[in-house]
Image (cartoon, rainbow, N blue to C red; front, side):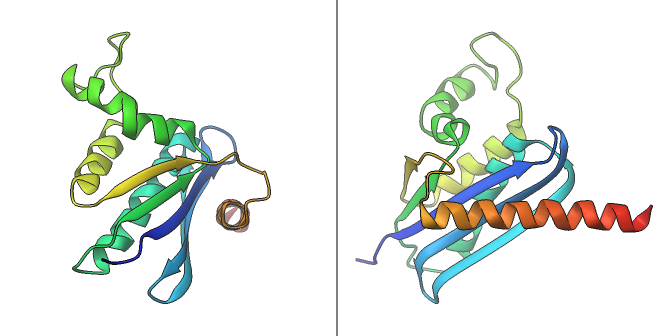
Length: 157
């Protein structure tokens, strides 16, 4: 049995919507610690939180067979509750909320739902900005991505 990969994720944005960044950090991957980040010029905080998890799961799938179990640690209740609780009702209700509104970020939730079907994933929440090393690393990477986008925008003015 392969060891469980422990992956921290974070996403954020400067303004909501605004320039955003996402990041994930793998604590015990094949190459030891590994992290990756990216960003978008105009996005929302929730989209970046979902993108961070999506990118982390794509990383795991790209490791190839056999796929290891994964422990996702996020500081986003939106992500954790969305994928473990709310998504079941959303799917049953034709991707509508309890209030009958369309689910926001539906395409990302559908993509995440499809990725999770291929993996053994457990979901864990950690308080943000609480000194958890890899959560803080992800937060720092997210900020760097937002700063990079903002600097590029200023350079183009």
